[in-house]
Image 1 (tube, rainbow, N blue to C red):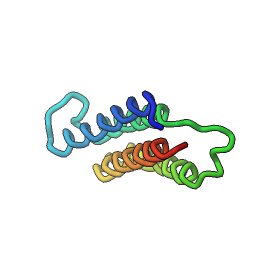
Image 2: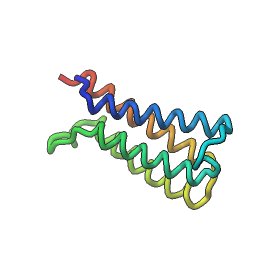
Image 3: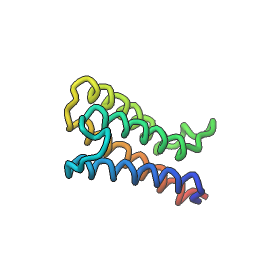
Image 4: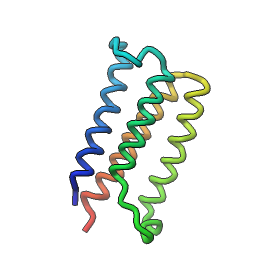
Length: 114
């Protein structure tokens, strides 16, 4: 069942996609002039998505979707660090994709949860 937290997470995920669109189309917005700055904003939005999507309890770790999401979260952190070091756009794009996939996994899991 979806909750208001899922709605808020969806808004943050949509903001992430909107930021990617603006960066990809070279729309002149403040803080979008560098890949590093954009990556930091996506990292913050991704943390917000995860904070609002999370419904962990002690029994959650037996669920394979939770384990997969945790691995993706670790990958997101690694991608963010590499992106901050290199400043390459591919890492920015990769982080956006990971955040959206994490949002999709948690939203679908909540939708079909009993």
